[in-house]
Image (cartoon, rainbow, N blue to C red; front, side, top):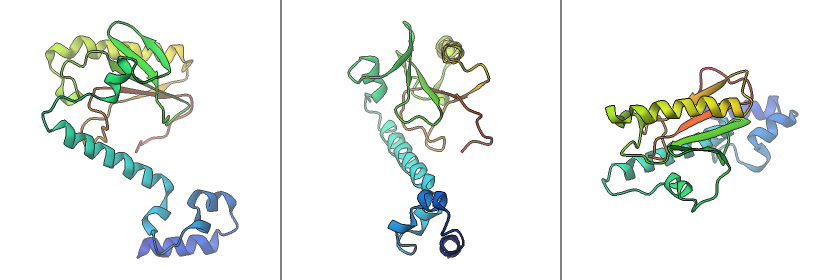
Length: 179
């Protein structure tokens, strides 16, 4: 009920603000039919990412061999804008960037490393290499003022692809706390 009151207040007090109207798109929606989506458009996209993460986690738990979208990118079955490649890993631009520079860094051979929490002693060399490549790619992308490294792990971490990957984000001042 509080959310509906917020939406009613927002439409009356900020009706003339084009930026607000465009962000919430009140002209094309009924306040009472979809109140949760009115609060913040980003919420629905987060929900979508959470749903993807939950679905991916469910599939990952089946024990069946999984071919991920990253496996297809590694095999060049799906095109990607490559930022870096060597014998151990591949770095490519995210198709839904969350910052001016958003690059994913993945091991070419996941070797059972579907997520960081699945890492074992034998994965230390590839984990170190991925971090080193992240630094190198950041430098190549001109991120001298800084960047952020993110690894989503498991359903609560909103991991949507169960092939370990590092997000390299930069190109603007990033807010804190994230998410």
